Image 1 (spheres, rainbow, N blue to C red):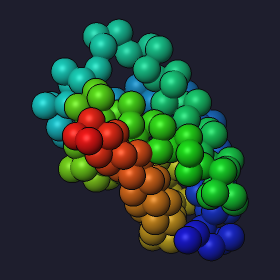
Image 2 (image 1 turned 60 degrees about the vertical axis):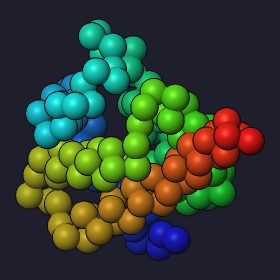
Image 3 (image 1 turned 180 degrees about the vertical axis):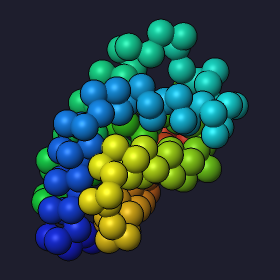
Length: 143
């Protein structure tokens, strides 16, 4: 569970990152594909629609962190979709690492180790919930 202090750090740093880098999502994808080139084939050549979906999902998740229960079903559904795209558990760690790195880069000197911890905690919760959705799809497919 996230503390209210962590939620505040995440919401403030996300707002700062978005205001400092209008290309934050593009930067994220470039960094992701550089770090994990094998995932590139899971995405369309034109990332414009995908980028909008990611930005929207991040905004939604960041705003709902005060009520994590509200995120559970949407994240499980998203995890089920990602399983269909070929996403594996290991991909979530790489995505989290790249996202935190790009956020830190966008926020700059105001970023602290507490920001890193808050984001890592939140992204762990998000990944675990998405993986629950993916596991439910696999269980249903094998039943």
